[in-house]
Image (cartoon, rainbow, N blue to C red; front, side, top):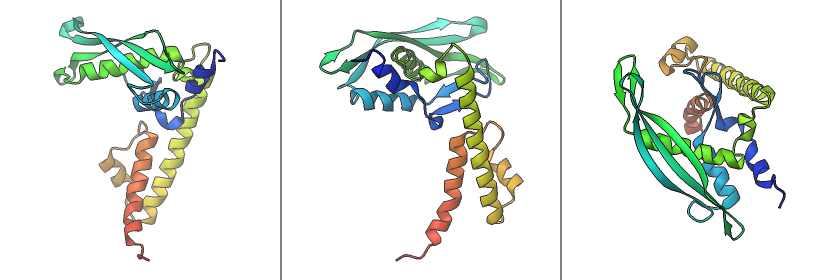
Length: 207
């Protein structure tokens, strides 16, 4: 087996599985859809529990600054290549349990679920999952991805505006109702385009 065989299968992340982070400390970086990781693991190794699996080693809540609390999950990921299972691939993930927000303290009942998703992403990173996004030797590829995403957003935004005008819908009012702004994702524009097309499809005569 070529040493980079699995790595190369995982490294490229399709644009529709990427989302630019628009706020917070990671603003401007790229978030990868967690379901894409599940999809590529399944494609390469097989269904979860048969070709890959993970074991939760530890869950804990740790005190943070200013009364906040953080949830952490440690896992071991295992993948099956041929007839052999790999050694444990460790991953640690974290998420906020109690956070200070503008309206006061917020307690998340999904903190361990989110921390588990984060831990899985860390283990997957060791296999090369999403390597092109994480690549640290330079930001050229990341910048290229950002441009690709922006071009797609511009394309679908223009198509949405044209579709609204064709139907006589006020663009500004529609954008306000849907909460559209410069951070709106490619996926959202696609969903809105599909929604606009649905009535037209329903009006088509039946054969």
